[in-house]
Length: 228
Image (cartoon, rainbow, N blue to C red; front, side, top):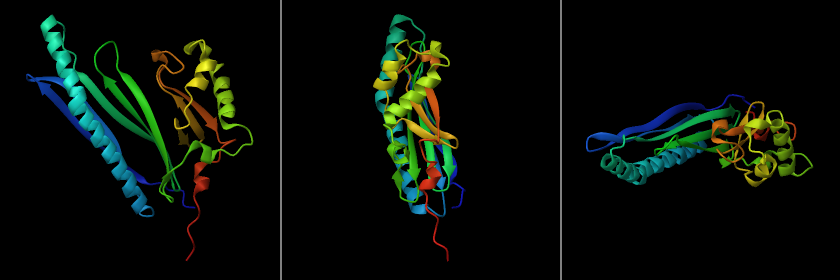
């Protein structure tokens, strides 16, 4: 199987939104555009999916968040407080791009005043041959419960530096575990937890690399093209 992945460009929407001549909200929303001669129809569908998602997020920024920013602006002016512009940022990283598999995650940062903004992460892994998303369960191959296996590996990593986590992390890694919160890297699966899920804000989004021992390398999901 050809190990080359799809080519990728970064597209974006960016704008300053004004009220009374002052910037009250700035957004930059990045999204990928993939290119592949072998998987053209699938890649085009994925590109439409991400463009539609980016446009919907832009609409949210220009309506709901803009209305909130204007209200905060008026309140700050009335009370003599400094005006703090809202900020919206979406970035992505392609973490696996080989054979027929693309895996990536998106971080959406929103600042609406206060000490700091909040970042949320989402991710997808695509099989370009089939035109479908790859689930975590699809990659798992061991004869033990998948969640139990993953939580055990995650807890092993936390015990190396437990001080950056909440004291009840054992309860929280179970409660806040979501199978969709993963992406692939060349070395293994990465499980992630959102801000505040298992650790304070300062600890950031926590990630745990699980080597491909109980998982198959996603490139193995790709079948070789027929020979002429």
